[in-house]
Amino acid sequence: EFSMNVVQNPASTNLNITYMLNEVSNVSFKLFDIKGQLVADLLNETQYSGQKTISIPFPSGLANGIYLLKVCVNDKVFMKKIAIQNYY
Image (cartoon, rainbow, N blue to C red; front, side, top):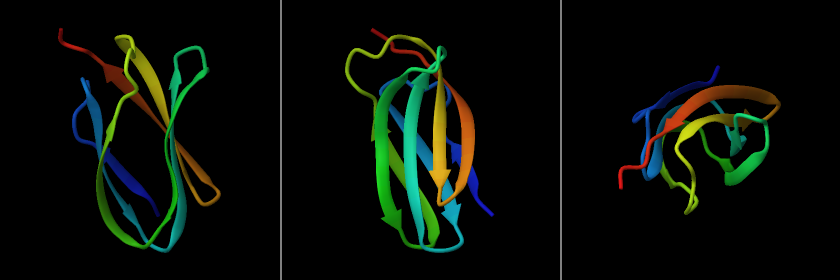
């Protein structure tokens, strides 16, 4: 089973994620806008089992709003709503 926690939501400059893998897994994180358009491929790699904590910077120029984080772990897909609020 996969568990994930987005540490800062709303996020401003990067996405801090803690998650647990029970086995060696192919992991990908993709960010979509609310219309379903791909905004960024954030991560795509094979990872060993265990607890992970990662910080992924957002692409420059990302507008404030609601986004969908699509996480694929092997053949399973998880979605998480992410709010982005840039403070200028």
